[in-house]
Image 1 (tube, rainbow, N blue to C red):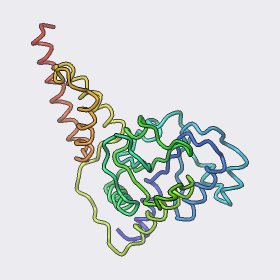
Image 2 (cartoon, helix red, strand yellow; image 1 turned 180 degrees about the vertical axis):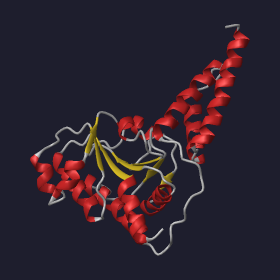
Image 3 (tube, rainbow, N blue to C red; image 1 turned 45 degrees about the vertical axis):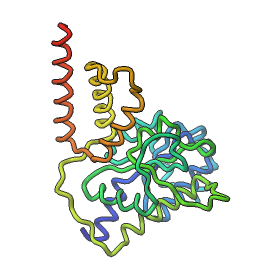
Image 4 (cartoon, helix red, strand yellow; image 1 turned 90 degrees about the vertical axis):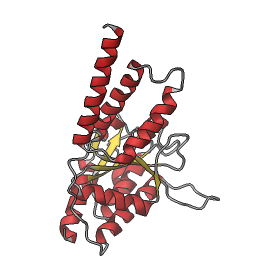
Length: 253
């Protein structure tokens, strides 16, 4: 895949998702940040103020990004068709996720895009970052290794770092290899599988007093690390359905 085609694929399949942004100026600055790196897709989850004049002022000409921005009510809706969701966070707060540097995250995102996947980088509210519920929807975390003595990055600065690494990945001399994998499972398909898995474990009385939350966190991490495709997910859900059927027979339902 040549560089121009690769850049077009990234343009079409990569989105930056800003969740519950409190200041419209940060939305404009983020639009400017991705536009300078040749990217355009911006999704907004329940922004406090948008559209807003401050967003257009801080966009500094990246009005096409703002006008094309998609607004959704919640994060699951914003990432439903994504097969790779990377959450930008300074701390994981007990949620077990693989953590990548910006450069590694960009490389993984590019690999997923060349395999035909939709990819999202997700950024949380300026004050509190991503919530635990939002982090759980991510498949991996990206952490910007800022100075520990002054680690506070503005939202748009964090977006700029990731957008820059994505551009450098595209401009790299290393050719992207096409993938022979089946179509990767999307975020909404994976969440459906995790719900099915949780209900099956309850049906077969797997937990026996142990913490369901802890076990499901570990299983989520295991299956996310496996990068399941749609065919693999169908097989697993078939196994779960049979396990539930046998549990019903055992109970005499």
